[in-house]
Amino acid sequence: MRTALTVAVVLAIAACGPSNPGSASGKSSGISQPAPPPPTLAAAIRKAVHLGPAGDATTVSLSFGLKVRDPAGLARLIASGHTVSAETYAAEFGPDPVAVRAAVAWLRQMGFSTTWRAGSGLIAADGPAPRASALLQVDIESFRQADGTTFYATLDEPRMPTQLASAASSVSGLDNYRGARVLAVRRGGLTPTDVLAFYNLKPLRDAGLDGTGQTIVLPEIDDLPNLNDLNKFATEFGLPPFDSYLTVKRDPNWGTPEKPQGEAVLDLEILHEVAPQAKLVIYLSAADFGHGDRAFDQMVTEHLGSIISESLGACEADTSGGHRNAYASIQDRAIAEGMSHFVASGDSGAYTCGEDQPPAGSFPSTLPTVTAVGGTTVFESQQGTYFKEMAWGGPLDESGSGGGASQFYPAPDYQKIVLSSLGHALRQVPDVAADADPSTGFHIVFEEQDGQVGGTSAATPLWAGTVALVNQDLIKKGLREVGFANPALYWMGQNSSTLPARPFHDVTTGNNLAYDAGAGWDFATGWGSMDAAALDAAWILYIKGGGS
Image 1: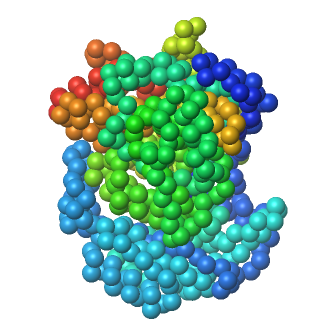
Image 2: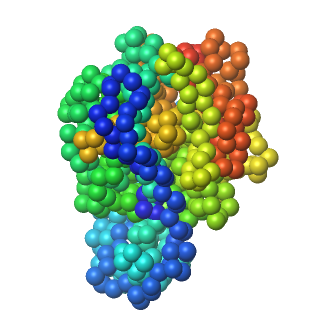
Image 3: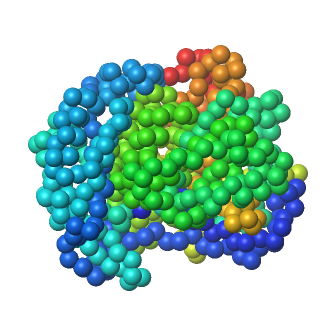
């Protein structure tokens, strides 16, 4: 979540003894349980020691979300399913460069270190806390938690200065407590061979689809230890070394990422086993919203690949409006320019904000313009192929597939065919699902040890890697890439019985602590997990049939 961005890994990687690459078994010292969601900002402030106003020694990193031109026209473009080039987007919808340059100049006069890159949807402005307080008319205070860590924050609503109002519509970065969490959890695990067989990816790989020509980009908040883990994994399973496939992006403007937790390793290893020839680019930022927004903005601006895999999230109700609005605007640009974006739905079941809070979703998975990925518990046949799945829900450790209704976003048109009365006409999550239960998780290598990991941040790169293979096949057949996936996914779900093969495994048992899985779409697993070969065939039919 992004209160500090939470990595959707409840990385419970338990150390394993060397495992047999040909099986999903392996010795383990046990599985760590998913960490409970952190307290909300208001709760953290109540429990912390108040240290007084944040002083000049505290640097606040503000990210001002810029207004788009012709927002109604942009909304029509996104609804149509059509896409435009980055150049066309900048000319028709991008922020007014004259207004932006004036805002940048004024912020510098006010004593902020300020940057803006052409094409970007954000102005980055760093300055001492008292100056930020005065600029936005808020009280930024310092606090110390019981473990000795400190943070700064405000519960005040910022007021946009008139000198910025013509260019900017939102601001994030007014606290460094809230951020994204990693959403993954960790014993032998499904090997690449198991994954290809279980989700029927093998026919695509046998047809020569390996991700060639595709690039997948990932926002991450935990660093990579080195390439040793990744290349040990590649060697173990006969995959190409990562050296020529991986690019790591850093920028002081994005803050300092956390020490390696295993989330980035998990994402990269799952993507590589599914699409071994795809290029992988990670953008490393600090976990707070302000720095994370900057890295996300740059990732979309550079547009090095057409697929985003994101295993981060935070309690939707505890994310600031400034962060949500800035992020949503950047995501609109990604959709308009033809990018697919898969986001983990969370690992605390329907209670992303905590069991002591009402059911709530994880942002950004609740955005209508992303594809939210939930989680299942898997059961293999004796032959290692698909047998069945249940919705992932662990009442004892309060873990499970994130799912439920958004508190802020109305139901999009593509979802109106499945609206539940429990959703109150709001966006419903997840859209799809895949293996996420740590007890039936994925084999990975972290800190040079074999381990088993689960979490919706494991299910998410599985979907992103699968769509890389679908994209490759679509291009091979002279068709456009997937782009925004949800209209096609809901068309497939609605028409599943009429397609040559069903693209989803409909998960009908289990629950996510609040909502039961059932026939068709549900709050625990969406449409279910993929049958990759059938999914590819259905996507070809959808696009050939004029699907938007």
